[in-house]
Image 1 (cartoon, each protein chain N blue to C red):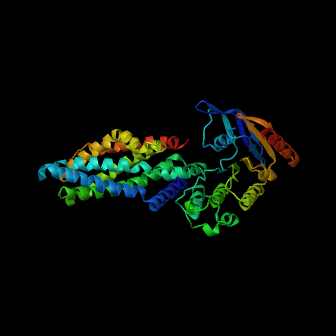
Image 2: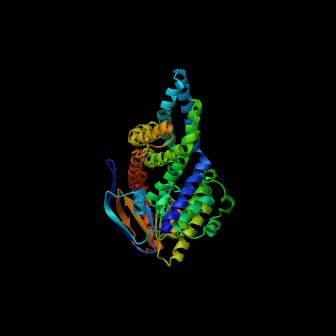
Image 3: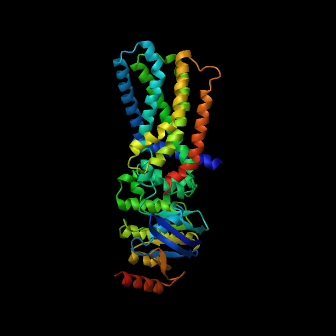
Amino acid sequence: MTRWVKTLGVLIRKEWRLEWRSKELFTLLACNAVLFSVLVGAGVSSAVLDAATAEKIYPMLLWVVFMLSTTTAVTRFNEQELEGRGFEGLLLSGVSGAQMYLAKVVLMTLFFSVSFVFLALLLALSLDKEVSAILSSLCLVGIGASSALAALLTLLAAVASTSKLKGILLPIISIPVLFPVFLCGMEMTTELVLNGALAEGSPWPLVLLCAETLYLVAGINLFEMAVRE
Amino acid sequence: MLEVRDVTKTFGQLSVLKRLSLSCAPGDVTLLVGANGAGKSTLLRIVAGLSRPDSGSVNRSSDRIGFLSHHLFLYGKLSVRENMRLFASVRGSQDSEQLIERLELSKVIDRPLCELSKGTQARVGIARTFLERPRLVLLDEPTSNLDEKGTALLLAEIQRRQVETDGECVTLVATHDLHRMASIATRVVVLAEGKVFVDSGSGASAEIVAQVLDRYREVNR
């Protein structure tokens, strides 16, 4: 078990180094966040919505932009594995597909979480909305949803990695499957925006946890099959 | 020990391996020769466990496999040192310093793999192949990017591995470079149309190996 966890740590460091050198995921997430926020902000402003309406639609806009931003950013996530077939080298060295998958999920969760906070602030700024009072709770919702998104997108990015149409294929196949995460995230954010905290007995954290567990189980069992020839 | 039994592999309508059987004893350095499309690379990938046969089985006595092919199985954005550390860490194997020195890679150890020449990349591939002290060495066209010196270093590593394992290491080499690889071969297997066409048998003498290779050259002339 110790050896298994140690190997996982080595793989997470490898993922970090690869991202640090290429900065592909970071750049795409940051660019998408800015682009979509500016577009949505400008669109809502030009629609002459009053402040109260803008506040009501903030959660929905935040999650639409976040989902679009993440699903379009991960299209090249497995590119470096495919270039030199590094993943096959790891398989030959006795690394399991589950370890490779979890290492990628951890790194993707980290980047998605940072992206979510950045996006929440950026969108609040463009809609002139105050979120500092609920920021810590919003971060927790973002981390929870990010880990669920990462769990599924890591698997789907591997499935789509050999397709020439992966740029468009990935958002198309992932958005419908990610709907539970979208719904949970949006409902929890709405509760935070309207009440300042999650409603007592809110079912959404549990639904999110169930969806994430399902994605993780699928990813752990199917990732190796997806990356193998 | 390696036992390949009745392995069949098809890609779409193309049947690449047809109930191929082959067994290799410890210490065998087997040259797999055959025309393009004979099934050499497919056989090696199946033996390595990277590809699954449609039917048949592969039994290996060890899961310590060193596989070198035109894919380096390395990360281009990482330096030579980082790649070696990564693969040494996951297997918990030997320190790579001596191997790096033997393959004359010390000068490029901190450079990203993608910035190196093809020949130097191939040497790094050799280092990764032998890093984990393999008991089964699979080499797919190993000399295709190597110069004379690189080939000499590769042959030395193959022989060193045999000595280190007291002749227990099984080596399979798919190659067209018969001239350079024949010097270390103890067996030649000719593949044709997905089957074993000629087999010199285990522990063949240099003369028998040369005879089989001469016959193969004549047939393919």
